[in-house]
Length: 451
Image (cartoon, rainbow, N blue to C red; front, side):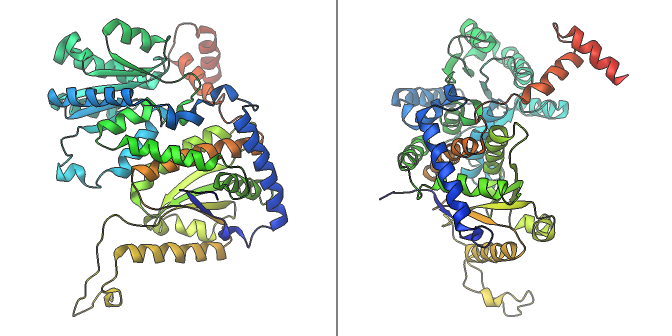
């Protein structure tokens, strides 16, 4: 029997697809499953993420805890995590999901530092405001980059590093900087060796958007005060479940149905829907994972997201009655970890007494069910991915589920899940416009074009 931590419900697609068509795509997804596990598809030299949940050694986790404890001893109350794309989104989505929604206002972090993110943009105002904060706090830094030369994180790190060296001197700064980078080469690895930074490895066979279960995600999440062992345990148990090939495998089901909706019904947009604001950044992580993995060769489903019920009062109109180019994947949480009941009021001016004694989450669940029925009636197929609750274990399950399903889905679509050649186009133009040495010819051509 297949024991599944992440469950999937395809019933919201039944009125849109034929079972015979689904079987065709299920067969294709099962073949893609074999391709992924055999390592016989395009990009197979980037399959290291498949075993990451079990690769993290206890001794390495103990080292992360030593960093945490040494920074606490120094009074560090702010950690700047520098990275872009997969180098920060996994950590950010986990920290956002697991944190108290008002921890900053309550000023109660259990003795853990506040985690802020940089290197994911080139906004001068953002960086200036970041440094306003860093200047007032007792800061440390985790910088994440395989090469150390990616422009956005490199700019941020240069500025943060200079501040730390000026405030704590070079040797003091070196105790407050951790590099997560290549094992042997690259500018950041060279600098880490020269300055004596503690350094951890982004495996050569793990791409950024699949890296949340290695030091890239695990160290920042641990520094924020969360149980990374439970994240890894959830991912490991999800991995064990997903290794079982068959029609009941939820990753196969997800890959088969989304490819059927895309290829046969012309559903070009997938909207990830959650009814918890804690999962907003999980959707951002998911969008990068699927957008960068599948959007190539003039193919791919465009990943979008909404957070309900808030977005039912903004995007809800379009989803209900706009152009029928979309389907929804609803990330359902079966149980709230907190309880708030609605009270009774003698005047009942808000006409809510009919809900007296009900939990708020019951109302949320009914809003979710009502939305499902309305959107299906409006022509929007709906898949549902379910977990028990928002905690470390279930986040680990979700991370591994969506990574594995992405590999299966991309191979079903017929693209390489692990490259991103299109990302380089903007970089070449930017380097030329910035007059980077070696780009003189491109710079002249672009400036002629823009004249």
